[in-house]
Each structure stands twice: as structure tokens, then as C-alpha cells.
Image (cartoon, rainbow, N blue to C red; front, side):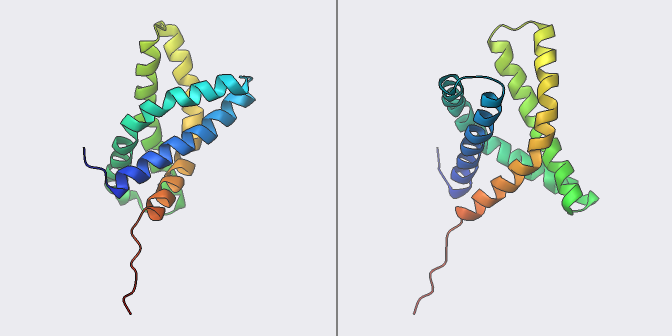
Length: 142
């Protein structure tokens, strides 16, 4: 596997965003710090496997959606759509692997939709910021 700056940036963004946002939500929902930390640590392998795929998918979707413009509202819509359409199927697969029934699956996914719609744009902004941090810096030659 070839590691490049984009892969590292996308992975760094997804893991750090997931830890901070996920832990915040879990602590507010009543999980103990230890439970939330365990949950976040368990999410790291999934994030390692999916971060670059999400980054590529988001880039593809934004390129396809440029016809609606690239203003704040358009980018908010595209980021929300990208985040939701990528993360809900992944979330559903993870839930199915735990043995939930169809009703539990639908309720859990419905509950996540609102949060994912809200978090799509902040994650898109953070992802781009991380990509900018990981770009090589040109050093002027004297």
C-alpha cells in the first residue's frame, strides 16, 4: 500500500474528528469517560479503512455537484449529502454485524441522520484544513 499525503491527511482528519466529536456526543449522552474512550478506540480501525475512500468519494461528489455552484450553501448541501450517503450505509453495516434486528437498525439510522446532516459541512471544512496542513511546503532556494 502506498501512503501519500492525501491518504495521511484524510486518515488524520477522520480519526481526530471522530474522537473529538464522537466522544463529545457520547459523554453528553451519558456514557462514562471510559466507555466513550473504548468506543472511540474501537472506531479507529474502521476509520483507518474508510478515511481515504470517504475523501475520494467526497471529492467525486463535489466535482459532480459543481453545477449548482460553489457558494457556502451549495458546499454545505454537498458536504452533508456526501457525509450522509457514505456514513449511513457504513453505520448500518456495523450495526448489522452486532446482530441488531431491522427495527433497531432503522431507529438507530434515523437517529443518526440528523447528526450526520449537521456534521457534514464542519467535517468537510476540517478535512480540507487537514489536507492543506499536509501539503508540502516549497522552500525557497537562496
